[in-house]
Length: 287
Image (tube, rainbow, N blue to C red; front, side, top):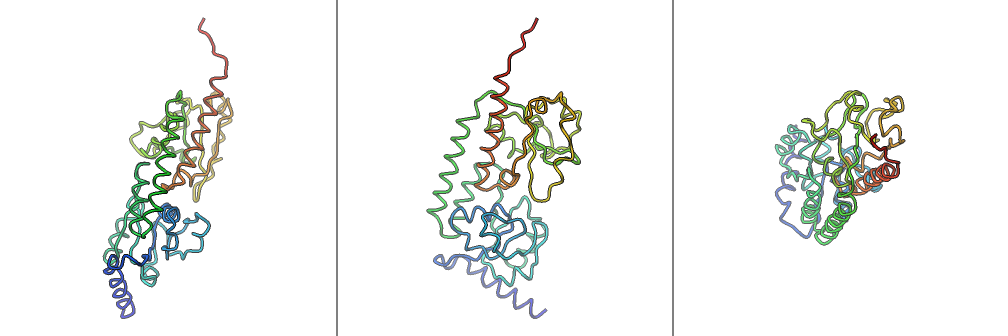
């Protein structure tokens, strides 16, 4: 108990002096892979002293000490690291975990992103936090310009129906505003965009009736076998008939950091390929 008391006192001292010395880079524990990517993107990767499982990009991130997962952390390990602040994601870092960290005296910095426009804002905030203001501005400006270029190139093209298979069993898709924004920017129509839930479970019959022209299957850490459903058994689906069942790297889309635009470009190119194929097919005239 005395040992933990000493640790807590040390942590409180570091937390209270967090903004007192702007010339020193802060020591950060980062509880979200996307925030790790953001910090590296602005040249502040060396401020991270602890992070969570799956924070594996860029490769240098693999050398950072692991202190837990998104749903569990070793509080004693965090205190031993004596961070000046802890970067959380309020959409994935549980409320009890945040409350406990605050109780221990830590300063929490939120990196949550719900829209693409939030990413430049978070980059600027992390730049201020770490003293990498100029690099953060450069990264944010590049992101905004690239996003605008993608929308200019693809958003106004003829729409293509897309089914995005998040999980095969149970069959789950997405209707989140984040993913719909990416699809819209690519000139794609998410066939389940109007669902009430962000991640609705759907039936095979619903997918068949939605007639998707592209089926996209992300592969990422922890997801189940995406080949559990063999779509070729339903040749009446346009995506199956035209061989437009595509696998992508899920981390590029599901991690809300700067790399998401690489994932968005990949989706835009997939959709555009299906669009070109559709336009090249002979039109059937009504009799």
